[in-house]
Length: 221
Image 1: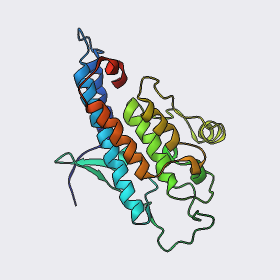
Image 2: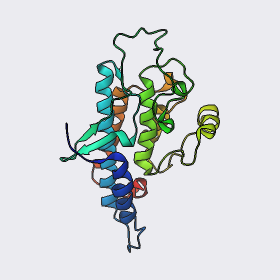
Image 3: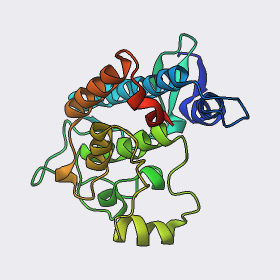
Image 4: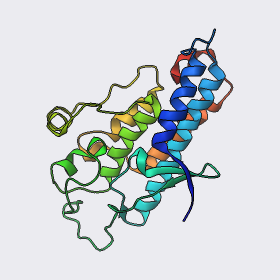
């Protein structure tokens, strides 16, 4: 087993958030550091891409992960992203599809990252992991926890019933905003597969990694 240095949850709360605030001048610095903000943004998108690649691999092996959240993503001593805790993962290679969906256990996983169809105990497919990834991707970008203060009743009313989602920062790149919105779509058929997710994330990170331009100044906060 690999020794993990930290979880993604800790990196978001203890490192990235502090470093972004510092580079933004939040802690009383005389000015912001746009180059540092850009590097931190690329770093987070790269981690998102590594997570997407891991789930893409599982799906190619007919495995649904079903519990994607920051607590289940870690970094080894070399900083390599590691997905762990496969207690809720499901091998569907021998499962029969009905209309493209599987009849699997509902209410599986962590509530704030759980796809609506799982919460409602409906039949579902690999796109439930895409929904979870959409919530996680927003968290990686915003550096805050989604649906804070939501109990089960409020979650059912707002997220499931009214299709409420966290607010997307209008300063983020258009491609990234569209990807997040598509991933957490209420209708599973509207969500992209992870091959598409990887393609978009690669393009977004590549665009930002190009020589820095002033028009990106406020996009990394």
